[in-house]
Length: 101
Image 1 (tube, one colour):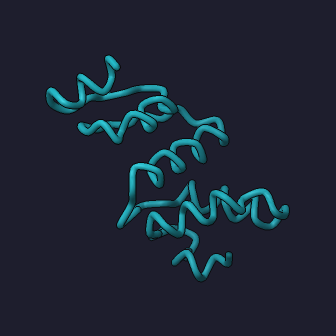
Image 2: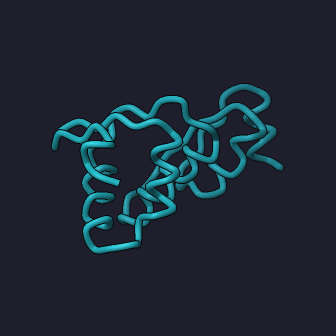
């Protein structure tokens, strides 16, 4: 995957959730992919059309780079996201139930 495909201009990255997940799965193919992945995650500003899996992959990406990650959610499908996050914020009753399960 190239930087151009990821809307990368050095300062601002816009990606769909699907693009992020595909890139996450292929991130260790080459040294160039590793370097691009690091720059993309550092500069990611907008993640659109993302699924809970995409959000979880983003958290994993950030943690691989030694970052502390906070996540918020309110649905049962956020359970995997909460599992990999360092700091969890549950929104509403359903979010609290997810954290306690």
